[in-house]
Image 1 (tube, rainbow, N blue to C red):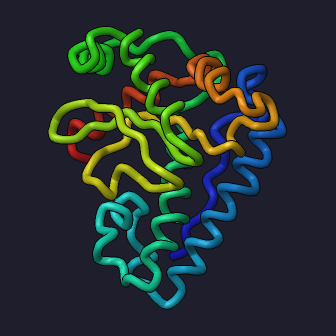
Image 2: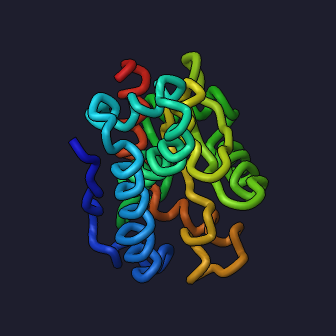
Length: 205
């Protein structure tokens, strides 16, 4: 069964002024669609692999035949990463988390401001294209960054939150000012959705 492009959970202009409408249209409608199309193309003839949930496919990346493995990493990672990215953002969002997620962040990083600073450091320190992540692994939260569309799932981590720092995610509005984009991005983080991902990760789902 072919992978499909998920619809955005909100209109393309919903994240204005922090993420502009044209960027959302191109990012979702072209970039994410291309990852899905290329993933399906790479998996032609591999029905058993194509029928796996994308998260399982990436967790079991070493079982993917070597001749298509990099294509699956690039495009399957792009599909999984972006699907999460759309889900953890939303209009009238921002602020800070509460409940168990907030407690876990405070325990891991000291406080919310320190967490934000560490994620920003990871985002700005990623040379070239990639992502900065809040992940759960070994029962603990940590921050890491990955190149290109590599997924933390391939390292045994569960991505709770991630920010896309490929230039196509921000260049139309912020040009080369990645730091300004990262600062603005906090205004569109949907902490309820992030908390749901954390709860699911804790439950091993």
